[in-house]
Image (cartoon, rainbow over all chains, first blue to last red; front, side, top):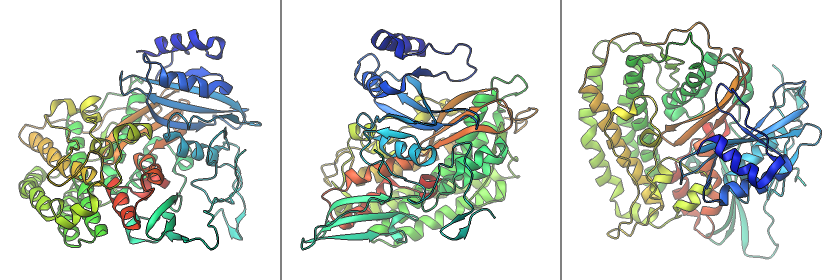
Length: 161
Length: 389
């Protein structure tokens, strides 16, 4: 199934929570979805027999520029049954980066969401164990945000060399 | 609500349970991995992995580097199979560059060289996995055999690119240098020498009674669970799923070669069941033979003459984003790249196969013995450099 068909199916079910596929993308295109209903949309993508996206290949946080007021979360899905792929994207504001977890659907999301929380500060509501994963627990700030300033010291050690 | 701070296991006082920290410096954790175990006698009630000890924020580095400068950083992710890491990254960038008309595409000769070094590195990686797994379980000899043969591959790599571990050999659009005179002869000598060795190793370790006792029916990872966890590569094939990107979504020139995709099986003779530690291990042993098959097919034909790297002005992929994956020895290595048309990526995310495999450890290890934890970690074959990035 190609992305337009998948987008059509999602539109039938969720209506205006799904944006049209951006036309003329040079590489992969994404389906932009409403962040608050990410969980319901993913559940539908997983359950529906025509879609059957049983694998979450990758979950990434995304910050495009320091001026940008938004962060995004990109889900790359793959169906082992129909061998098709799709990428869906949810945009949240930097001030209040909350969206529901998809951990209950794909267990891959557990650690990937922790990573996005760790490096971008995106909070996944309903996640069973949301804490830092790669950085130390007492690290301040979210390094992959474009406006991140590295701290002068960490536990008395000088950080920038 | 996000829980801040560390989550440590709580133990009831006066109970029989104890908490044991395994690692971060432990010879069986394949790098710096810390496992926090809640034990009831010798039974593991809970195992929480703590990772990040090798974290270098590769992704942040990448945002400040041009695309060719990122390649050496990918070497340092999975340093056991650095060629395949270079390759995975270059494949993703080349896919983006395909929209650039000044980019001439990867030449044939480079494709052959890539497959050669990629498969040699796969053998080297599986050899290391085989050797260290034996050592974890308590068999020291296979380790020496594995390193003896891996050394031969490292010598071949040293000849072709000058480095033994972090190669930086596969570049965007091709490879960095052509093979030296008679290199193919050396590869052939190695393949002739190595092919019968796999059977020897099977006799040495795979069929060993103690090894079988330690790995058979331990930590069964079935296909549904593997897919739900996003586990790929030999770990997924060990669960009986015939899925290999080289076969099912062929990239480079893999569609020209004839090879099988080994999968796990129930083997009543030794009691092995689909998806247990033994099957995951066995898939790697079988894969080495398939890699030998591919290399032999290249050696038996004429490698086309010509350039070894594509023509292009600069690596400035047109604005847009891409997710591309390739089959590294440990599973599917994905790269998510967002470009704004400049020389540096806006965002680069590496999706590591070991990262997803390790996340299943918590569920796999419940109710097993402490010694089984070692068997699981060895069988999922992790490299911490790739998990922590």
